[in-house]
Image (tube, rainbow, N blue to C red; front, side, top):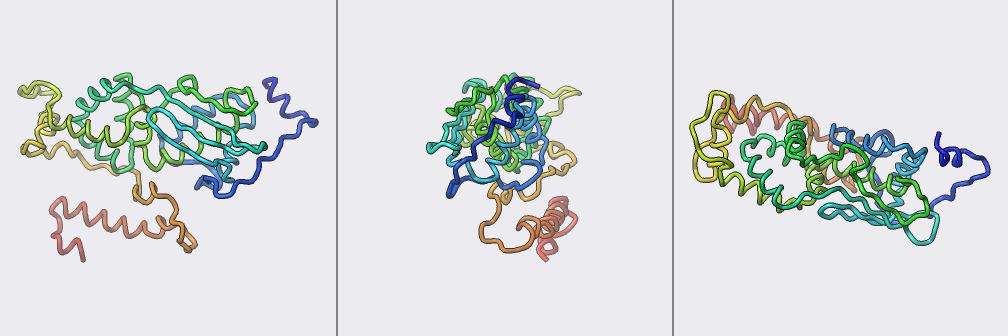
Length: 295
């Protein structure tokens, strides 16, 4: 147990309650974790690896009780104001090492041969293969440890991670869980710029055209020439594995504010989405006509 943990457990130390906030930003999670996907769990494990006593638990409580006054994300950082026990909210900032534009350009050009990864990403799913690909290029999206993260809070707590930083980290976990593209933003590139680079990479082959080898089919070349009118090799779609992400638009928007049902709206709509997905897949495979799919 650290000296600070021992200090926290002394009976004569009484933590101050934070001031109430009207209209604060509340986490959608009311209990349990702050996300379901593998990338969110890895994001949270980074913070859990730092021994900070009960600060993470209190930070999660701050996030759920709406003590975060403001939260802004920009390329390479997230900044916020968190209401504590003092009248003026504390200023919090979290930064990840941002990658330069030249590296993003090179990465986008290489991703031209992996259209399926990009499609899954736009559908709210971060393939593990994409993260491993980025890591191999020295451009990991997720931090491997807390040492990669620079965080600062104006509160008097001198610990590496205070409860105010913990609250922002948990809110970011929820946002990343709904939209993994935010990881790119935290690494220094905005969504629109990333989309432009990916489109440009598909227009220009990432390597000189040459007959494909036995080990490398002509998938990347066909994708690179797609926007020039060349048909895509159907093998690039593979076996169309399930992404594991349900209704990403609804997840990104969060809970519907006027929904009065006993269960979340997306859970109520799940049978409709699943049936539409089954019909859409059969229609795409030519197993039913458009009229049958709409009936």
